[in-house]
Image (cartoon, rainbow, N blue to C red; front, side, top):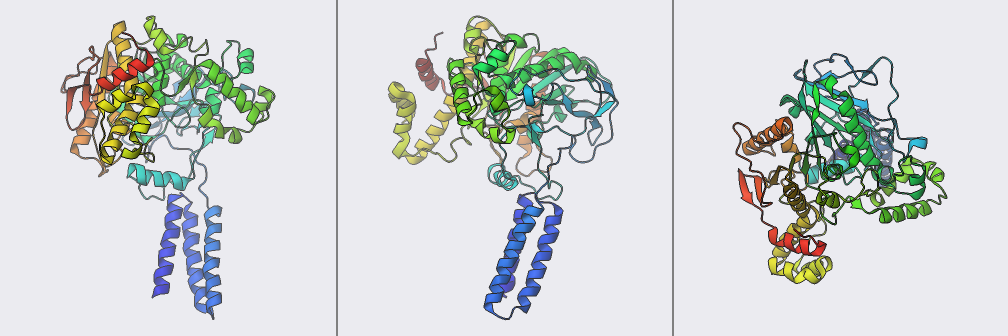
Amino acid sequence: MGFVIGAGILLLLMLAVLELNKNTILGFALAIAAAALFVFVHGQAANGGLRLLCWLGWIALYAAILFATWPPVRAIPAVEGKSAGATEIITLRDGEVQGVLSADGEVEVFTGIPYAAPPVGELRWREPQDVTPWDGVRVCDHFAPMSMQPTNLPIYDSLAQIIGYHDYKISLADNSRAPVSEDALYLNVWKPAGAAEGLPVYVYVHGGSLQTGQPWYGDYRGENLAREGAVYVNFAYRLGVFGYLADSELAEESPNGTTGNYGLLDQIKALEWVRDNIAAFGGDANNVTLAGESAGAASVSALCTSPLAAGLFRRVLLESSTVASIEPPHSFRLLDEALESGKELKARYGAASIADLRSVPAEKLVGEASTQHHMTVDGYALTETPYESYRRGVHNEQAILHGYNSRESGPFILFSQASLKDYEERIERFFGEHAGEVLALYPASTDAEAKAYWAEIYGAIFFDYSHYCLNRLAVERGIPVWEYYFSRDNGRLGPWHSGEMIYCYGNIPADSKLFDARDRELSGQILRYFANYARHGDPNGEGLPVWEQNGSSSRLMEFGDETKMIDEREHALFAVLDAMQGWTD
């Protein structure tokens, strides 16, 4: 009996690893066959030594099966489940495209449309170039590869889904890995099915610390905004070292004297594509809302003051990040620092020139993502910091909707929680001479208080405060501005960083038990607020609680157990950060 139980448990573990690692179905069949072979051979073994060899042989055979049936690379389909068929052919500036219909036939989806030439070979670290027109009809029914970025073993991603998101689903239909490539400058369009014109356009920039991310992530797919009557566009852009390396030789070879902002220039190129082509999908190129989350929102914040982005969008929507403070907390650095970092990178690879660095395989360079993931003031895409531009009255947007979550710090301090023992040291290390003021505001006397206070302070430093800065700059310039505070808990991420996205774009799965009726009601409200904002520049509409403009920089719309206006809670801490950065009203 012990043998049967032990062998059964080991087989279940083997099958679980195959599932979590997304191995092919053949791997499951071979694993079961190997288990049957083991049972047979073990039964024939005459002594304990041979039986031990049988166990070891089974494990070795399983290891071979695991690697032999490793999940293949497979493009992600444009529509989850079965499509209702193909769309009509649409003619763009560079050629003809045909997409697919959603399962119910109400939304047309076009994926993998090139908006710039592949940035490979001699085009690595150059401004994005025009697409070469194509002949025939380009079938756009699968997403293009994600931009070059560090990737994890599939089993790691599955465990993260279980531990972090709590919504892992066992399936034999996802036994593959998503493609990743330097050749990734493609975009995707969701539109209401059928003929249309003059529709509002919503362009989304994905997050991921300017190091990771992909356009097909389910939380921000555009099908439901399309159902609300908008044309939704998202895209990949260069990340990490491929998108943000700065080097003086690159600046010299550039006709514009630029370096360090290739990912940002990709985003501008995508917006130019929208300007030139979106009417073919029924969109109004003069009514574009540019949106993003996390590093995507930081990018949107930068584009608000880029001279190259002038006229490419009308309004913006920023979730959980801006670079509007005097010293942005992330995703941004000044050119001198960027050039020095690039110089150090060349030295690490023994590269005497950019030609040498261009010869380094992308798979080797991708490990530098964590050292090169910051926008910079390059004198071309960004002529000064966004704060400086706003103070001079320079900005591209006509309205702003923005906000942050109540527990932004969650994923970032998951393994570095504060305790009473180190709480004061952490405060003193960050706030220096202002530490006493912060400790007076957050006087921890227990481990639980220290943990909770540090989580709030960390979130304020890296996320909340920059929104406060943006709001004041907007009010100063007379820009209409609405701000939210997302606090709704659930069985998934709750109000952690990025937890709001699945609500904002109406993508809570119908069969998910992690969300209740209030979650679905709230998601519907936020989706309508966002659709109204994209349509006419004001989130308010019939049947929705009134969302007041934040003209005082203190009134937020809370998306939580209720949808209601509240007062900003962190003004006292923001005042300390103002003093540290030298903010003056």
